[in-house]
Length: 230
Image 1 (spheres, helix red, strand yellow):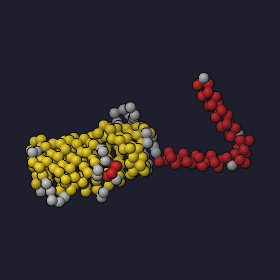
Image 2 (tube, helix red, strand yellow; image 1 turned 45 degrees about the vertical axis):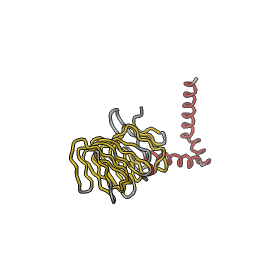
Image 3 (tube, helix red, strand yellow; image 1 turned 180 degrees about the horizontal axis):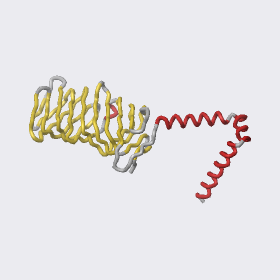
Image 4 (cartoon, one colour; image 1 turned 45 degrees about the horizontal axis):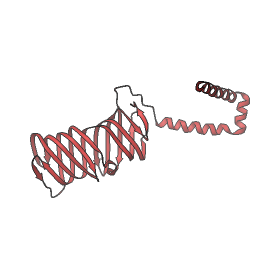
């Protein structure tokens, strides 16, 4: 039954196309002004295809993406994994621990490491960095030791962290500029839903905005899959 419907539908389309291509059909288009309406529809779809090129992603390949100009509030409740990450963070610390020592700061602190393994958690516009490193720098003071335990919570002014890994990053809503391989012009998000799968890359905050750049196996924008989906 379903096959008969499809065949009938295709036959109707062919008949309509043949009619419109005939002299009588062309005359009908001119008189009814339907030609102008079809032209408008055609231009609309042409503009869409000009902005988005389909992503041909073979199994095992990854899509390069960049999410720019995101308000830090959209990061709340996110938790990302750090794997041998390099970071540089300037923040107003609320609490900090280095191995068994409790640290306190009178002003903003500059924290950095060249090899950190752990996690970063976002909550109420603050970040918590927790894990271990072989080196930790705090302002002009540097500690070099294998597997230094380090935890710090505070409100950042700027930072950059590399080698971030996360199987699944989900934004219920997010605003910013999104680009990916095959997209000719950036997609401007306005409280759109975005899901990133198997993310690997860098996150940075500067001038009060978040920038996320890296690769994914695929993603969903407003539940529409882009790339390979599982």
